[in-house]
Length: 293
Image (cartoon, rainbow, N blue to C red; front, side, top):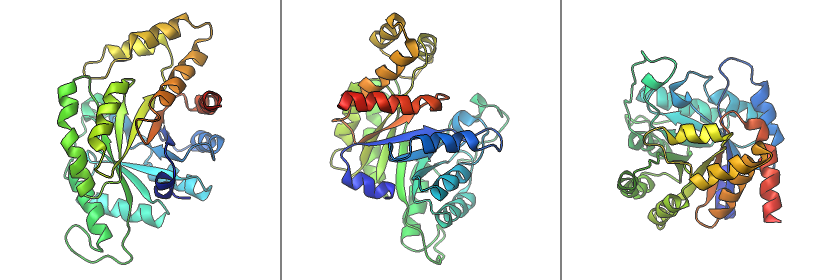
């Protein structure tokens, strides 16, 4: 069953977000996807995340579709102009990809190719316009398409530690829905109140709202994240819970599972962000299932 159909049938969905490899070996990512097949609703592959050069996500998405795993293609506006975006989307459709998540993309100066010149020919709204014109049977210049695609489209919504900045994005949810977006994915946060506020803002727009839950791997990682300006803080009670735990990796997974269950009634689903801890995702799902039981 395709991701769009699942969202219409389920009250809460789980997606695992995976980074493509920095190289050509896809063995690990395919094994990760197969290890959670049937336990999550889709696997989403990032597009040069944090401006770090990696394999184009269309390849792992296609590999998963060959194995009957639903895949979500991430596409950022930073690295492409309107010609490339449209041709990539046509190629994705031809390879049986039906869901796409549009992102702005991070500043290249933070990545491993800091001399990169960002393109940003199209904003996220411009990317949504492309998907919308495709559904109507033409490209962005009005030229007709043979067998036009009709993507299930999502938009990534960065979340900050500034409530005023977050609130300024609420109106965008309705605008994106008007432009044809079907779901929105918030940036990683362990602040349930922020997710609740976005959920209220999304209510009535028709958008399905997903939270993103980062797997915290250690106390040190949590403290480092809290030192980054603009990134939502990991609550101190979570840090102390991990610090007191006799088996800290297990406690990290329990923290994530507990938070997912806490927000289950607030949003339509969660993107699990392993950030290098993909091998732990099956164990996380075990913890989640144990809580539900």
